[in-house]
Image 1 (spheres, rainbow, N blue to C red):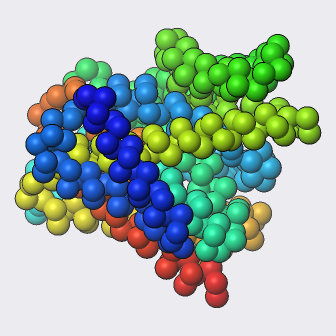
Image 2: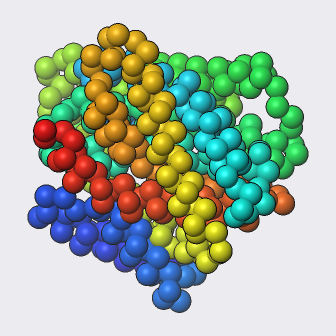
Length: 396
């Protein structure tokens, strides 16, 4: 991928984001992905190759850090219970139930094994709300909803990678499944990543005062975002959770000191630009990369998979919130519908698809096509529908 490719894609993103600022509800992810599909028809852009390392090691750390750093500590404290349950037990139940439903209905459409169905489910479980949270806040004024959606998205990325890795190993016959070995690996990877993130987030919140130059302090945040990610991965912990918890810890520590207001402004200004730039690139690249996998004969089943993912997600969210009296009064049925609809798929799902593509295997081609198609439908339908649905459900 040449430098001019990046420059042109960022410029296209600039135009789309500029239009977005002038609209009340402009589905940026949808527009960028569809533009990416269109660009794939142009030979100059068709030569672009998107790799799993590009997504995982270059794009994910800044996206995760900027979201985690700006995520309000108050929002996490107030909704920690439901965020944690949805991002852990909830995602495991989703993979199991969605995988079983996909397998049960696959017969008339495609030849798919049960493990293959679980693989598709694991690809579709991580959520990526992106601009949905801002639309929710602007259209309903309900910050609680936006906090739950964004908080769940930050945590479940790490959970989904662990589940995906185990299932991918079974699919390619690299390993067998054992419940206790899976649980042990899950706890090791997740807790290790979270602890490393909290530790280095705290250390950087103190070390940042070795210089009073705000630009240098921003530089240190870049070292933290990428450094803690790669350090955790080196020790086989979750780099995703390490970066998320480092950002949350840094935000929490700075939030306790009024004197940090100027530094927060500098950090916000820098990371906002980085986030918009990466989002523009990644959604355009999703469109370009997915185009080659979308010409297949099972689009009807891909749409069924998308509908199943919404139904299963709603059942888990609604049943979870109704199980506990405190959450029952906090999250209504209408809000459960909005939480369901706001969990659109994106960056992490594409990374998992590319990861599977690099492994190879008998069913991989079919899983890739179904995965890309379901993610594309999710991005288009859910991002287009979140504003009118929020107006209908939350304004009554």
